[in-house]
Image 1 (cartoon, one colour):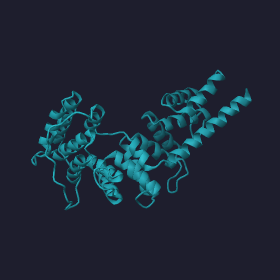
Image 2: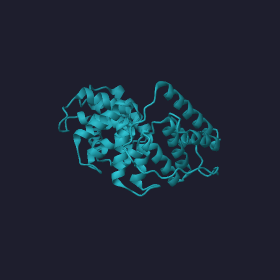
Image 3: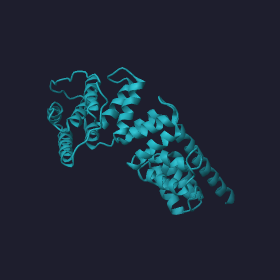
Image 4: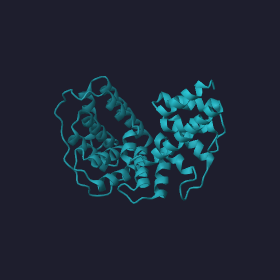
Length: 311
């Protein structure tokens, strides 16, 4: 029995450090792809779209040349309510299969210079064509929206330049628009920028800037950023003091947000009683089961070993 228990502990320790190394080596491209979309209407549009449906002829915006630095879009409380109502209406029409009506609504606002949320509407037009697979048309709308200060479109545009989708691949423009989106408060962009600084992808490697941007995203509820941010408090990062309380706080936030790797590691920490975490079998089994349900095979193996002992 003692030998089996020792085996479980060894497996858990291995799981803990293996997943930690894996998370620290993850490339920005993967984290950006895995990041959840935070804007409700575009997200619903992408989930419900069927790219094969025909669409009505539309006006393609003329390519824009950037004349001055874009400033973040700012709306009054009343304008924000109007914008949210517009987004909900466009999303509902799209979800109901009335996609041409949805686009017509978005295009009308996108071409109306007096509309306070014109930039947001332009971004919705970009999402529409992105879903339909017309990347060049989508890119032109994203450019208009990004230059008008819409942070979400700036982030989408950075991804287009990173992949060379609808526009020529351009590393400098990738970073430029990601930076603008991050400065505008877009959490996915803040995660992406923090990850780039962490690994030196397209920017000089800078742990301080990585810590800053990951913290900004984490505080906005970006789950994977919370996971990466937590790792800065484990005592292995220069310039950041070890803090078990903050480590556990952000790790738990990430696990609650559905980050399977965080769930598996949190379960192992509670089982072993490490990283300032008191040993707690109930919490250990809870988080390991969450990770296993999320497809983590290592967590599944550890649970099977624990249950085989009747623990």
